[in-house]
Amino acid sequence: MSNATWEPRTTDPTLDSLQRRMRAMHSLYYQAVDSMEIEHVNHFEREGVLPIAFCLFHYTNMHDASFMLLTGIAPVWNDEWQQRVQMTINDHGKHKTVDEMIYQRIGNYVAFKDYMRTVFDRTEAYLDALDPTDLTRVVVPHPFPPQIASTYSARVAGPQGITVLDGFECWLYQHGLRHMGEIELARGLVGLGGMTS
Figure (cartoon, rainbow, N blue to C red):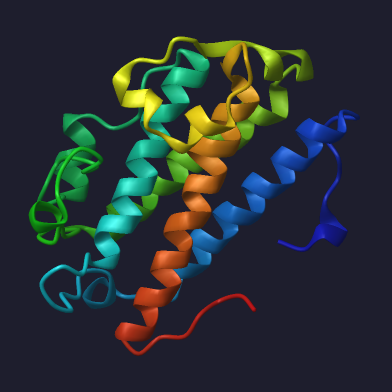
């Protein structure tokens, strides 16, 4: 998406920036999946190297789950989506080992793309309607539980705890860019190029 076509949905500069960055990052994911076939995403390179399928599902499914923590809206992923997408491991893998998750594969690539678009569209629509004052709402106060205390978002958090803005920035935006970097690197392993310079 070109910035020249962007029409601000808010006069708040922080929210406007977040909306634009989330859309831009989502566009990278769309470009990635549209320029790969299922044999690319399910390619097994070697022991200890996660397939692109892991990054795609891990990030989208974590995005889906993190959205609930930020908004209170239930995740999209359920048994019906699993039946459609046919993940070999019905788990985002955050608490699993690389050795367990190297076997992750996407069964129905078209259905996965539908799931990803559903998750991303919902996030963008939510941000479009968000009152900028909600960005400072605390979603995880201090002291942090163990599963949060070791995360990057805990390092980012201010004295009040993790806010809505911190959550969108860390759990959705920065997490997404991290995995997009892994996807771009892995694309080279399957004979495809990167997408940005």
